[in-house]
Amino acid sequence: MQIAEDYYYQYVPQLLNLWPDIKSGDSLAVKVGEESSYFYYNEQYIGVIADKNFAQLFLGIWLAPNTTHPAFRKKLLGDKS
Image (tube, rainbow, N blue to C red; front, side, top):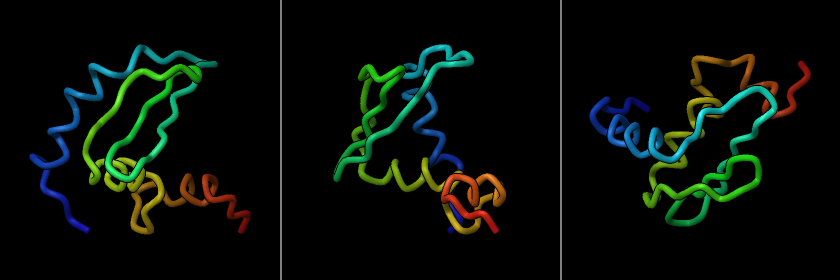
């Protein structure tokens, strides 16, 4: 699926405001809800992207079948082939 840059670039300022400086040993997690995506840094809630389309775009970077990182996708999905 081809996504226009101006569509997904709208999320960049929101993510820059949400995400702290992540260092080795830190964790960043996203919990996907029906209408929003909730972010956690080291298991502490840090904010939300209130857009039902965001999760598919964001997680698709690594999990979509046409990802630019197919080996990493296999690892994330537990594919040992």
